[in-house]
Length: 206
Length: 112
Image (cartoon, rainbow over all chains, first blue to last red; front, top):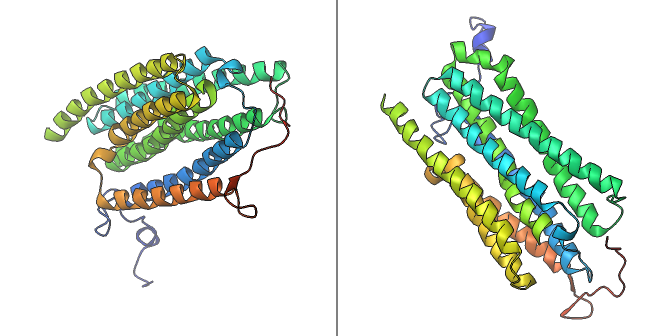
């Protein structure tokens, strides 16, 4: 490092707004897709486990006889709604409407909390009926898959809450970079929705 | 101005995708009540789920118009995902006794 270079210019993150010429993407976008690829493998391993456990079992219960279909359907609708409000939050920033962005990201957070509250009631009902992970192979994979998914929902809530609250100050001085951050958070959130789209029929309906 | 106009057009697409996802969720629940046999019900449910996932990935995650490097990354991920699935299902096969699939002899999982 030359002595004439200021410390602030040394540590500036590259390609936060302008695309990296090597990839055609800003760096964080490639980063989130790499992370999502690892997430595909994580959930893929658990879905593979589910298939193996199911085909190896002589007595696999129908999910609909154990789980609450209306609550599962409600949660699916809630998560789909949160996905559309998330993408609308990003679109609002693209249209330079910060007020609408706050509204849509706020609605996304509200949907995420509703999802977790419904899940809490579902889990409580199972525990009340003495259905625990050790009860059966089906309950074990149900709690593992939905529990891991729930942790991802909580992770999304933490990130989105930051971007809705203190993190949104970036809009004032670096609007494009902030818009990119929302796009990245959105990609993660849509992935969480995408996983649930498979979990719902596999665990609840089949 | 043009960019904002493009985004407005995209917003209409997002709302249509949302309607399609909500509709398909209802279809998934209704179809699961029709007796098509276990294999039939699983096939139909997974086809609908895959279509819904494609809508989310294609439009909400903008994969329909993404850079080549992302497609390359996802192709590689898909390859490893399928490879892993084959490994898992391969463990269902018993290589010692030949091409006979393992069948559990006792029911060890109480059903509630």
